[in-house]
Image (cartoon, rainbow, N blue to C red; front, side):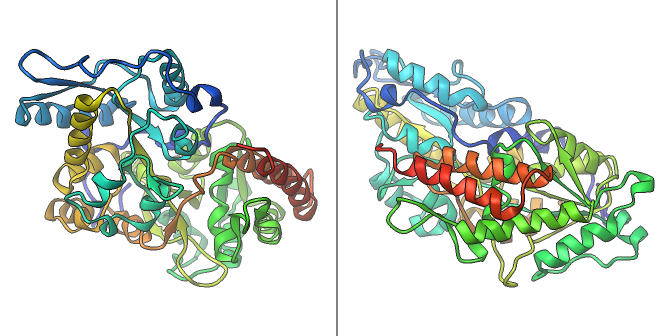
Length: 448
């Protein structure tokens, strides 16, 4: 994505971001009983320990393409520098089906030592007694606990305990097509802009005669549809779950957020992506027919490759204060006996330490896990060469995360249905929000 004469060169293959869109879904239905119950035949503590004391750790990393190459290169380095621990990356599943694979593995009693688990799935996975409590390891680890971004700390903490290690963190901002802004005679947005300005800008960027949309929104009701609205809810003073945990905390704020969607529809300025994953919406942007798209750092490699002249600006807000959302994912450690658990924790601590973290971030198209990592020269150099990346990193200072709660998938689904109803003109924001509240409140009353 050329940014005029100062645009960065296209990234090397190792720096190309993976498709993160699949990682934005909420936790799918899982075998809760399998997670909550002890495994039937837990692996013995001696299994995986060779006669010479070398411990083999099984890692299900879930990565594909360039991020797979990045994690496997790091594993190879760890194995060279830690001769008494061997990390095996041969098994597992891709990240989008990891929850099902891990759930089945826990039920059968043959599960990995470490798995890449979406942050939205931690509340479900942590119910298993086989998940190792990492509270002591991480809070007393080489990186001070408070140096990790607040959103990331929240994402791996369940009921006051650290139930996983952070693996990947991102944030959301608005990517603008500078060519379309110039064509419409519009200045680029500035930090502190509002949602009213966003909807007005989208309307003014739209040019039906040329097939140009002001912006886009996923229209299938999945997590990619929903998570874009949570910053609006938080900025308005709401929360996903209300005080006491028996009802949602965004009945009024959700209606106001949906009114923003309705304004985009009324202005005929929003491309509604009819398919899961938002691939079509991003493709419209990459083809030069969309003025603004909400996305994360994982989008930059494709934008650069497409040679879009772009800029990144923070999300708008109602208040003028910075607010965004982050979707961290995790390395979850499982108990296969003390020797393997200790070795697994050693590997995870090494992997998320700043020098390795930065290499992983650049390979996986993500952001530094901590302020320590963000301060390393390697990240500063990478960030300086990538237009817009500093905006995503800066956003982590104010980012929040979805609640680590087993009812979240049902809440998200109800809110997603409300968004689609408004996008397609089937309901008013107020009526859609009433139906959402009824379904989401019912989900929160289910004993768990």
